[in-house]
Amino acid sequence: MGYKDVYDSWKADPEGFWMEQAKAIDWDTPPTKALNDTNAPLYEWFTDARVNTCYNAVDRHVENGRADQAAIIYDSPITGVKDQITFAELKDKVAGLAGALAARGVTKGDRVIIYMPMVPEALVAMLACSRIGAIHSVVFGGFAANELAVRIDDAKPKAIIAASCGIEPGRVVDYKPLLDGAIDAASHKPEFCVIFQREQSPSELVEGRDVDWFAAQEGVAPADCVPVEGDHPAYILYTSGTTGAPKGVVRPTAGHLVALNWTMKAIYNVDPGDVFWAASDVGWVVGHSYICYGPLIHGNTTVVFEGKPVGTPDASTFWRVISEHNVRSFFTAPTAFRAIKRDDPKGEMIKDFDISCLRALYLAGERADPDTIEWAQRVMNVPVYDHWWQTETGWTIAGNPAGIEALPVKIGSPTVAMPGYDVQILDEGGHPMKPGELGAIAVKLPLPPGTLPTLWNAEDRYRKSYLTTFPGYYETGDAGMIDEDGYLYIMARTDDVINVAGHRLSTGGMEEVLAAHPDVAECAVIGVSDELKGQLPMGFLCLNKGCDRPHDEVVKEVVKLVRDKIGPVAAFKLAVVVDRLPKTRSGKILRGIMVKIADGQDYKMPATIDDPAILDEIREALQTLGYAKA
Ligand code: COA
Ligand code: AMP
Image (cartoon, rainbow, N blue to C red):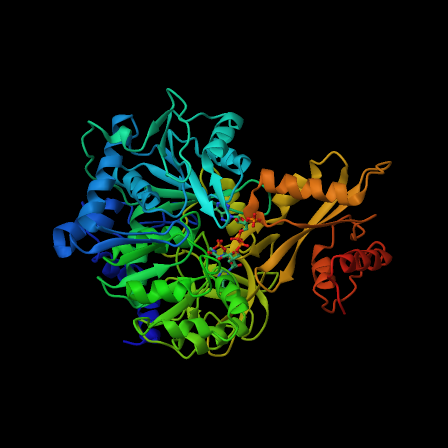
């Protein structure tokens, strides 16, 4: 069957399609029905089933002949460590940590926050939670204490599992002071913390609250897998929305298992036993779906890579890892390739490595620019597949289903909708648009298994953010078009979310931080184009009347404030002081026009603009930073 047959078979009988895929999962109680629409437009999948994620990701492979296969390959050029963990070893590690959590009272439904860098123990922690039905929430290490505190107050974890430190090029990032600061700042306090001490910077433990990773496991019985209902949350992952308050995306257990398992062959074209590598971070959705769960559920070996595409030690690191570990399919963000291309424009470093094991490169997380795709294709000599999805969906909305049928690549398009997704382009009134016309990208409800059923503790926000603008549809927040052949093109966000090095960030969240500076009367943050990171945030500050402090001092302070409040990952380094912000007569800041001016693009003067002269002031200010070139 080709792609079209598979897609049509799903469309003809969506429930039958997913019940068929569900056969690949080991259920404690198999589902009798796929879709539960009793609360439409809120949908759930496989609600009457009982199943355990960890059993499917680990134990069943030990029982079915993969005990000695590597489950995890750890390759850390930043510390010089390489290691392998078999499925049998992984089971012992996970059951041991799960036992320690259970012995301290963590049970099904309790939340556990995980704050760890790219070490295998991060996956062990995630799987240990799934083993006992606890709901984990991984927080990315590049976020500051305040962001961690916000997540602690929202998820209300019984426990936090953290590493003592992460390692960035040229510096050790001590996680423990960030963790302590976050717990101090949060209103909710966890009952205990499990700390994984790394030799690069062990930390002091808080007596009565912190317990060492290994000490916690001494004398406790390993925990067995606890079956949970199909709609039990497997995890919560916070992502950026329009405001500074992150959205807690809920991942349902059964749909997650079924959908991810299906994608491993259909999209990534790997068979059980193959090595799969996603160079991302466990703090992001790519890390959840394709460093941890997807490959392990499917019986693949996953690579945990602690390093950067360049500088650890150089731009050949990816080639070395692919050849050394026999990687079949490789997934990363376009920004990583832009970084490699910048350091090694001719791609000469690849010549020292045999990467003939590799079948394809998969890119996602941000728009893949044609230059980068063409460069990667030429240098690596494998197909490059762009694919489009979001934290909310957890797996591909549109991609090239290479394991079913590799469709012709059209550069600039992540290819076609996957089974499960009826993707449509809508105009402002919610009417479907013609091929080639630009509009809002929406998905007809219900979304497929594995996608978010709601937001954690925020059902109203879920409805308002995703289901209200276009009744009967899920609003993706992206704009784009579909061509005559059904190929999708993703052009821009329709909200104030920007994408910096594949990381999704809220300009609204940064504005909240800038506005809190005592000298700032008003501000705006926009995303400007950047050759390496895709976009970079840029702040515009209007100072309070009478404030005569040197502008560069205030700018330095706000840059530090964003780093301290949101974290280094925001990459907020550009800000400028202006007298006024361009607004409509009703007072709405014209951020879209500011972006166009900064990027040197043409724009149409909006009829509703209050004072067009302000745009010249903005242009001049941008030129002082080297932007807004004609
Ligand atoms: N813990 C602490 N700090 C972190 C961190 C972590 N886990 N991850 C990133 N940071 C810090 C970085 O050290 C950097 O700090 P700096 O301002 O002091 O230099 C800052 O956050 C920005 O990091 P990053 O966006 O990674 O930029 P970079 O300049 O260090 O590297 C690239 C640039 C292109 C090499 C890098 O962005 C990259 O490889 N990105 C991969 C994209 C990716 O995996 N995206 C995930 C979605 S698929
Ligand atoms: P995140 O939830 O962090 O994965 O970010 C999801 C958003 O990143 C999407 O809504 C898009 O705006 C953007 N994005 C992800 N993948 C792609 C892609 N292949 N092409 C264009 N934009 C993408």
